[in-house]
Image (spheres, one colour):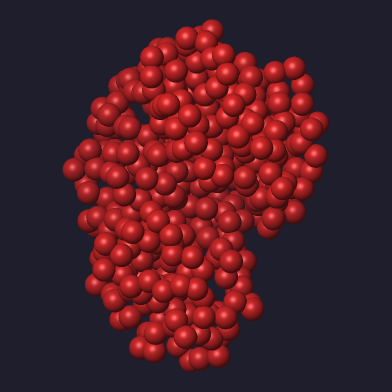
Length: 447
């Protein structure tokens, strides 16, 4: 079968391309711009790429088109050419469900925050246990160095996103996956470009719960009222609550870098790792419960997590010299900003923390969380908010003592790097490219 993927250089679609190739399909693809690192990875795998979108760049012998989400809608010349023809087409999520996930034990990780990290934790635990799982993760786990692989039957770990599937399928992607083991990490309002309110998101999660069999397991936080409300609407699957009276993490260090794991009232082991923050401890507990459902003993899970190396762009150290460290973090929501900086503060004590934050998500650009953004960075000593032209609200309302709003990246770099103390931590927070600020900042510090 010849599969042609529209939008192939996106993270999800590029990973699907690699999985399809490994299943034995002939795979080609096109995108508006063919760009690294995904283009390099695909070309090295022998996958032919074309650009830009056009009818002429669609091969004649395609058996199935897989249409991505970003920038692909009616009016796109490639989409229009597919619709004029008779070759069948589908979305990326539906392709996964039909050609890969249908025969696997699917472990899906959903929620507003922590999906990528928790998925990576579960995949690593299963790998450490010798199970060679398949996975598709929206980032690059450092323990693997790749974002997807087929692995062996039966286990497949997937990051389950609530974003819509495609221009012709407005359901959340995760409704295609039909998990046996489901993690719901948390639930807050996000994706303001497609959801009007939290209730619409809860509807999608309700439908997700309806797809989990009664032989499965739903893992959720005990203290999240929004998740509890969804479960109360209907859940036909056994549940396990993280942070309950009998299943919880007992911190052995204030920053979350060491903790004991208690399950059903019994201490099952302990974890000592590089990660910080209560949010990562909670992610770890969810990962352990998911792996236990797959048959891995809790003690083995703890041993694996002690060797877990996190995910690229999740508090990834990109520069370290003397007492100065620069981190790249994929923060996309006030809660993510708050928990990440709080974890770092617990680790470094009174050392200076400078946060440099870009509102790159659709929700942040619209100003949906404008009222909570300033407080989300309270653990930092100094904050630089970047206001690009694409932001649709006046970010000057964030200006306050210690908080600066700037629209020029060079100005930010100059101000951030002036009169730095001996011990300092600069956290660059964005789920976008941030105009290359990461690289420019490191270059400036290295000269």
